[in-house]
Amino acid sequence: MFKVCLTAIISFLLWVSSPSVFSQNDAATTPDSTKPFIIAPDDHISAMLDSLAQLKIFQNIDARHDNHAALRKLPRDYVPVFPDSVIERRIRNMNDRSPFEFVYNDAVRAFIDFYANRRRSHTERMLGLGQLYFPFFEEQLDRHNLPLELKYLAVIESALNPIARSRVGATGLWQFMFHTGRMYGLEVTSLVDDRMDVIRSTIAASEHLVDLYNIYGDWKLVLAAYNAGPGNVNRAIRRAGGIKDFWTISRFLPRETQNFVPAFIAVAYVMQHAAEHNLFAVPPIFSYFDVDTIQINQQLSLRTVSEFTNLELDVLRFLNPAFRQNIIPRNPENPYVLRLPRDYTAVFLANQERIQNFRSAEETRQMELARQMEETTVHIVRSGDVLGSIARRYGTTVGEIQRLNNLRGTTIRIGQRLVVRAPAQRQPNVAATSNVHIVRSGETLGAIASRYNVAVSNLMEWNNLNSSLIRVGQQLIVRPPRQ
Image 1 (cartoon, rainbow, N blue to C red):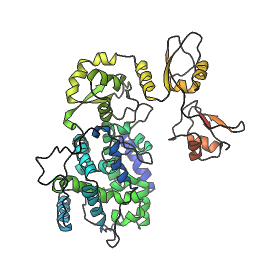
Image 2: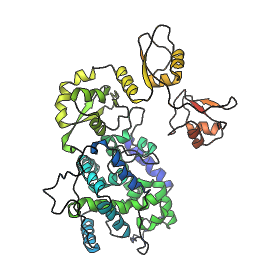
Image 3: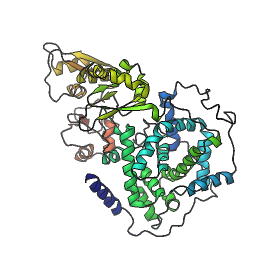
Image 4: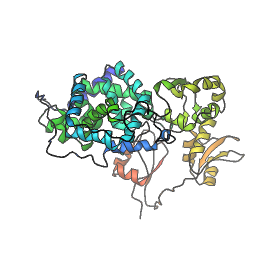
């Protein structure tokens, strides 16, 4: 019932912002072939490929080692070159077997060259990551009655990097923005970011794609709307005179989105014809069928799992990137899933009770935070201690100690372990005449900005905020600090 209502609301809101009359002219047009197509160095797709360098899972792989030597018919460094007629024929055959309209033009040619020639090593890594993620993607796409080719959308969005984050804050394999993720049930907290959860984000992406297709009924426009948002696509359609064709409206879309459909076609081609281009997967140690999932019903530390199973923490973090502090929180209503290499599942299950009882839930959380934060220590409360005196001792604030330890009040007990931190960066000096606002329950950054007649961007800059998330009790500078 909720899903039906949500879909109806989304469709209505997007319809309001769409053109009142759509042209029925379905003639496909392609970019002007007289203009050379160039992929800019700062293009989102290039940035996502570069992000693969952050994945520690690849850092121990000897790039000179050829896992597919027996399959190669050509030297590893050989780059095949095909005439346009051969590539065009292959794409035409793909088009005959797919609900997508696969075409070949200058933009598609440029991205094929990008993936198959200029970024070959990155493409081979993405082929390896595909062995880990594509089977689950296909399972969910099929369950939602979506074309299986949509698995390539994640390649364009994130280069299959589960911890990818764009310059505008889109996160995870499917690059969900914060509010779009919330619409589809993806929660973001201090401990968990569901946008990086392989299972939950893939289900959310499938539901989002279903909603977009119900609005546009055209897969190229669905891809454009997924990348730029329906509002941008609707405005582009209006500016193009109501024509609902990607190639016609492309020039009215953001540059990143103009590239999105050509890149999608190119990736689909390269991944389906990788062997012909002498491209072979560099696997990240294991594939989808080498990984098991275990439902976790109480709080658990990935570090403790690593210690008991002798599995490297980097591997655990790679398989479970949603747990931002290496902690799986207790969530009885919607338990989280721990992903483990199959060979380690039996070891974990045999020691599960010991692992879960190794430390209390609060000790697990505190120790993990203490390990990860710079200049952090754990203070054991002694007789006569109060939060104020502890905060002064460590050069922090009562509010910060409360936040780090999930304290709602100021009551503490002798022997209690408290995470305390001496901040590496002090707040800017604020003159006595400057205003400091203490956040209250229900307030948002936008509401506070309106109250003090300043911009949200100013508040974020003055308070060193990376997002618009604020917490009750937080002190915010609401006037420009004096220089």
